[in-house]
Length: 110
Image 1 (cartoon, rainbow, N blue to C red):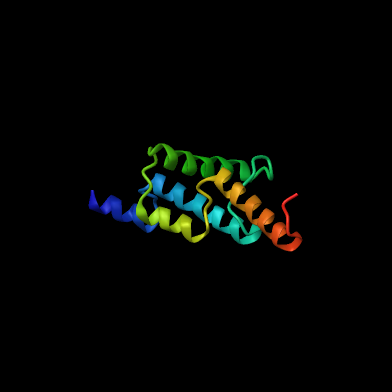
Image 2 (image 1 turned 90 degrees about the vertical axis):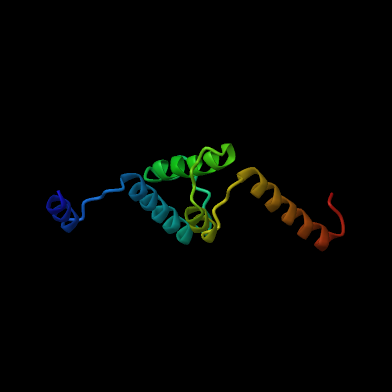
């Protein structure tokens, strides 16, 4: 009934468990990014991060396979904290930038 719903709302009952879980993980990732300067959570880095690591993988893998029903709002939130969608491409780009800086400083890539 409406009265029961109102009573549950008053005590903060969570009607959208999946949305709540996603938001909680996003907030953890955001805090991780603020502390570490990146969103590349490593498995086993900290015990508390294993769940976050798995959640991050799920976001990436789901996006690649097109299976993740990521709303535009969620993708925008992740993009705002510089979420890395492709770890290999990110690593390639980082190594390229280092090689380019080395070449500019030394005149060669050897």
